[in-house]
Length: 96
Image (cartoon, rainbow, N blue to C red; front, side, top):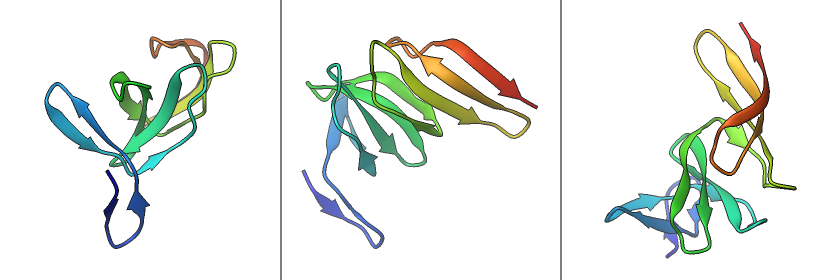
């Protein structure tokens, strides 16, 4: 369902536990998951429009061979590396 705001046009809304989540950006599906952005965080949806990895990343890529590159930038540090389809980092580096 498209909507318009002052800065961009978004094309998706996701129903998650009866809550409609407005998506500000989305990338292509690959390996049945697509990175999507809600507010200022990225997460992943499946082809049923269900959120399968919560919105916690500052940025992330599509999945390839079961892994995606993602990073989280916090006040004190940054974590970047590869995540699984469960959203867990399996290889990462931290910067303080």
